[in-house]
Length: 211
Image (tube, rainbow, N blue to C red; front, side):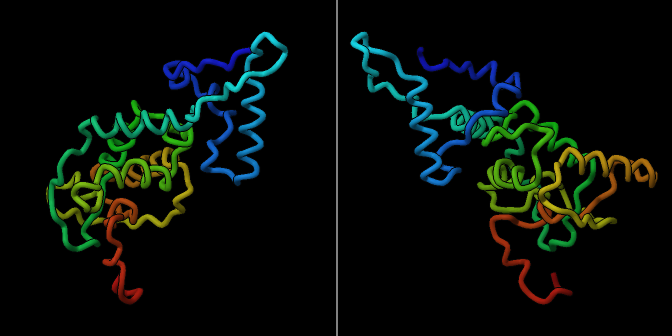
């Protein structure tokens, strides 16, 4: 039986096609990766007509690696947040509004899934920092807030959170907070992921009070 042919367009439309795929070897222990690779190769090989299996092996690039490559290429040429809009020296003045956060997540919708087959409703700040915030701010080497703000944005609220929380849940919570407190969607929150320059965290040095 020949190895399955994966249609990336179908994969991108249908999460269930990817949810059960094996992670690429780079993300697994060597012994486990080798065993999985060998089993998959045997399952995908073809007989050469003499009763022996030929040397055909699965493509070196897994579905997850194809998705990662597609993500990087599409993000690179997307034109999202092309230039730094401001310089805000004081980290504590880098608030971000609900509207800016919601726009950020929605602007990435067309690119999902992320590398490692992470879909929009699964993405947390670990994913968003590595696969969106840092790439989008790489050329300017600044905080994300400085890519979207035209001037200092003084936060009214400080968000204490775990980076592993699904970001779509954070968005829902902040929407509820804005509505319940009658803030509108322009109130500024201080969120470390967006306020800090993720390329240079030396500004976090000093005492606890100073940071």
